[in-house]
Amino acid sequence: MSAPDNIEEIMLSAPVIPVLVVDDPAEARPIAEALVAGGLKVLEVTLRTDAAIEVIKRMNLVPGAIVGAGTVTNRDDLDRALAAGAEFIVSPGLTEPLGRAAIKSGVPFLPGIATAGELMAGLDMGLTHFKFFPAMANGGIPALKALTSVFGKCKFCPTGGITPETAPDWLAMEQVLCVGGSWVAPKGASTEEIRKLAEEAAEMGK
Image (cartoon, rainbow, N blue to C red):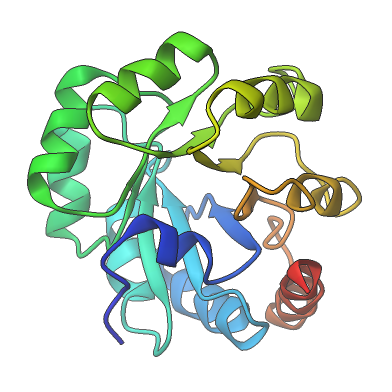
């Protein structure tokens, strides 16, 4: 299946985007299959492990999965992720070189912001969809509400410290389209456990 060609469609595909740190490429496909079967088809593979690029390639083979790369911090990361078939790009922050390169590539792009100044830099590049990161350490829901009151056209995916208990509160905010969460695929969990966690997460947006 081909990925939606804009970041809003991707963000609206499921209420929770799994933030995945996978050390063993052999685990990639079973994890992706379990998440997709549970209703979470948008998968963010973080570039935090040596295996990440191979993991993206293998998860891309799973029918229905929309596989992107997270923790993309520079143009080299961007190039490697795109070469591996990443269908969207998530960054923990926003720099002009990375932002310009991502926009030029045409890939759906979700850069991280934590402050009004970073948000304004993104708006200057023509971006309107952002990852609010780190969400809890950066003031939580009150902080994002303060930003959304000023930047009404922007849409967000809060990520960082969000739990199954707090996710519904974030999702209740009008400008929050989805949240990022690592709880849906904890290390050592079986595929059955991951599928169950995905099913519970997929229900949050309803």
